[in-house]
Length: 228
Image (cartoon, rainbow, N blue to C red):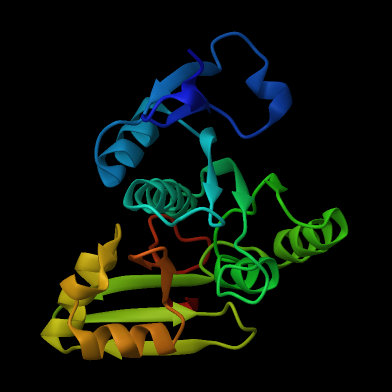
């Protein structure tokens, strides 16, 4: 049975980013089952020495009509997000939703542009997919949409739209909403006013019936903290 045919996602893992270096003896860490909580699995991969990770599951936003399908897409997106936050090279594939929706190619490639770009965008016109990938790759950098926890507040910095949009949240129920949304939650589990505001700012993505928090909590700074 191949890894991608099971319910447990797998990742092929290497110790280096460079494909040439990855071909050397001892650089491949194996195909690793990721069956635990996403945050714990990302910590485990980092501690193993993972610097390049190829995920087995496709993020399929065109098929999120069942709870299992939506949960699987959110789990894989969460792996991409949390590994991106560590500056790990993530190799993954995306299948956008139908045209006209929030997960269509053009829209979702902007919404997710803070994540490592996918290797492929499937299920859409090849020219449209290639154009979206080119824009994504050219515009991607670490820290594009992140959040950090301060004493009694959360700060979000979002540059996906070209300018800096900064939000400081000190209301406890907004912070509770972010915590619940971090790895996906139904709308009923989140304070309605907080969810509405976060969705208006496009900080939350609806994946089927699951609401998912887009920014990552950055783990590695590429510049001095004062410039971030």
